[in-house]
Length: 381
Image (cartoon, rainbow, N blue to C red):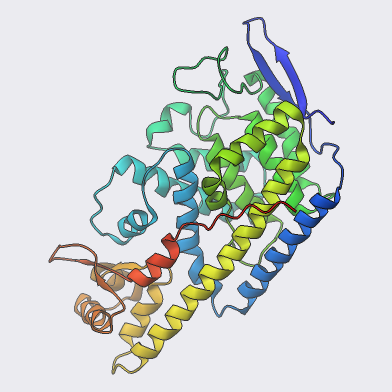
């Protein structure tokens, strides 16, 4: 079985893992080919749906927010999607501001990375920038945002040491060369893109180049790669929901590659996640747009077109305030308030808090679609 790297015992008395450069040697078994075909078909359906949507970009924001919440949840953050969207709209949220800031930083980091891709390409330097955006002003700020680690880190239970850790990545002196090799691999096109990013995600987590935030940056890398390789016409595919729903298997499959060299199991697991999340994205986006169409029919009968314009804002965030509508549509505050009142009367939105002044409102039916948990189905071809 091909070995993914070397285990090296250091003079300090603990063993570190030094991954071999990508790509590894693995067999194209029938099982792996079937998993790749399943993922390719599902991505193709999502791409087709994206091209048929009248304006797929209006759905990007809530899907990005959902990815931010679920990727952060894997690392222990407890903020919910509803709380993040409500806070972005200006609603009162009774939750830890630190948690909300961490999740909001993920959105900022992802949007920064996507915006820079066309200029810089997918580089190690871009990952440093993304890391800096991710950790600025939050609890992980001690971990030197935007800088690769200068000391040993490890993965283990609280209170563990490198001697008792579950996994100890390469020494800091090896990080730069390993990342340079990973960057070269990311530029290659010798493998199917879905296989390439599955390998690259493992490699990044094995290198663990930052003192903190490696899991989140590694999952951001997946989204950035999809966009850089134009896997989809619109960025609607995110894997953190699948990883979070199958968290134990996610970690065990990563660990099994390092410890046993079982690339096939990891690749099949990853590709299964791509397929299932593609199906999930098609389902959610289809239901969201069908709901919006129903609401447009209701609002079209009103004498003013402002409620219809306000309605379109809900696709980006199901929470809104009169102040937010005023800013986004350039209408008077009173006009915005009257339009929201019409949407309340139509049963489209309802009050989201108890404030009398600048109260927030929410389209609960839309939020429910976004907040539904991922229906986990790990298929084994």
